[in-house]
Amino acid sequence: MIPIDPQTLRVQQHFVRHQPALKAFVLALAPGFADAEDVLQEAFLTITAKAAKYEEGTSFFAWACAIVRFKLLEHQRRGRRTTGLSAEVLAALEASAPPVTFFEGRLALLEDCLDRLPERAREIVRLRYHGEHGAAEIARLLSWTPNSVSVALSRAREALRICMRGHLGEVAA
Amino acid sequence: MNDEALSRSIEAHLEGVLDESGRRELERMLLESEAARRQFWEEAALHGLLHEAAKVKWSAARELAPVRRDPVSWAVLTWRMFCRPVPMALAGLVIGLFSASWGYARFAGATGQLVPLTNASFEAQVIPGTSGLPAVFDVWGGDLCRVTPAEQGITPVQGRRMLRFLSPVAEGTAPRPGYTVSDQWMLVDMRSWPATEARTVVLSACFNRLAGATPGNQRFGLAMFAFRGRAEDGPRLWANVRRRALAYAETEVQTDHDPASWQRGETRLEIPVGTEMLLLRIHAFQEHWQDEAAPNLIGHYADDVQLRVLNPLP
Image (cartoon, rainbow over all chains, first blue to last red; front, top):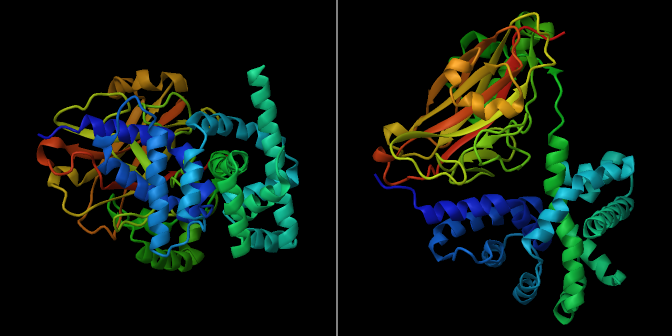
């Protein structure tokens, strides 16, 4: 019997635990949902293969983000859609990426903040992020103009950021 | 203070409508300013988090919905049925035509109901729990696993994602030697179902794996256990499940060597009167001693879990 390599198991567990934050990291850099999934999947395989190189006690999230960035670049080299951002910019953004707690803390607040959105804004957010429709498709579904959908999405996101800041301020206080 | 021009560029980046000059300008701002990078993360992180939050929020809606039943499934389906997407689509067409005549009248209408399970096809990309049996309703939980899009030549049966069993142990649990399984469970609240009449439910799921597994690693299983109790009792009840369950049903599913085809298994249970919750279980078998090459269940998948009630709810 070959036992499960405990280090690989631990690293996979870290990945599973941090997957929402890693996904948010990928989507920030490569906003297309399908592309982000491809990148995340490839990153998972690489992270599993390189599990022995991860040093327990260091930031798994930072280690994984570096791998994700390289996967993004590989995607771009293969001519796939991901992000138009250059390698230099991706490196700079990775270096200044917030810690995992930034993502996890905000994710925990989002459901409540979504409930506080006006109904129309909530519906547009649902179509964009649950339905995975682009602005043009949402415009067609709602008989709006694409520009008005973009504006509404932008306002909804801003309202959510304000809501989360309010929550985080309450927590800090 | 946020830079509005930068904010507009970030929005365009997130919506995929940034043109070449806009991209160059965004890059310049991001490279020159730490504040711009902070603003980028503040705004762009929300984009990714919203995708995750939306999946959780809007995939969790759960209500009983009458559906047209699949007459062929009840007539000829055994616990092995091919779920290959194209044949399934063709079968669906045939079923659709078929059920429009006698099939629908016989099996569907008032008698057929699908119980929409939360994240039944793992589309929400919500990470199933990996800390063992969940103590709350309507979430997947169990051993180490993940939700994945198509990979390694295996395409989800339903939607864009599927469950991959990763390990026969839960998070924080030491690997166990010998014959074992990788589980995912879900507790379903039955208290809103009428308590005066027994009901028959059918649990089914599709399974697939990479080719080449040894015989002990070709099997999957699914099961249901009826309990009285609360969700938080789940792990305790599981500890001696066959004695504590009011009733249970389980079956195994043998998978073939073709990653392009899925095998659907099903198990049927008459739920006793007084059942308060139903524990659903899907699992992949792993025999360490037979599968030295792939100890981590790296190619075992499940998708499209369905729970149907045969005699209808009012």
